[in-house]
Image 1 (cartoon, one colour):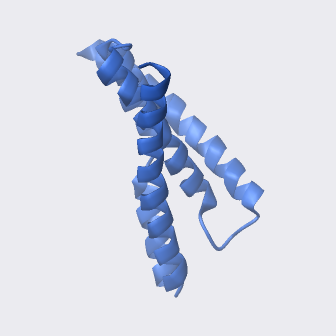
Image 2: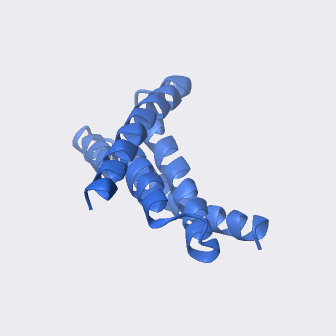
Length: 128
């Protein structure tokens, strides 16, 4: 149990650092202060990777339980957070940006679910 916690914790560290770097880079590249493009990028990338890796783990048994804990629970768990999404959406609403808040919720959910589906589908097609 202790080894699994260390794997998840070290993966979470890596994922959190990656989240910071990717989110900041995407937000800077967008040159927007009105919409959280960085969080959108992190959530879509993370959803795609979770779909892709989960398909490989479930249908192909390519990962041991420890590897799965490190990659999916640790790295991707640290990389993707919907808490930032919720906070930013509430901030948009608080600041009177109802249309931007609706756009944020719609884009996060639709693109995220689409990316998970795409990850599963791509992994299945590559390794069938």
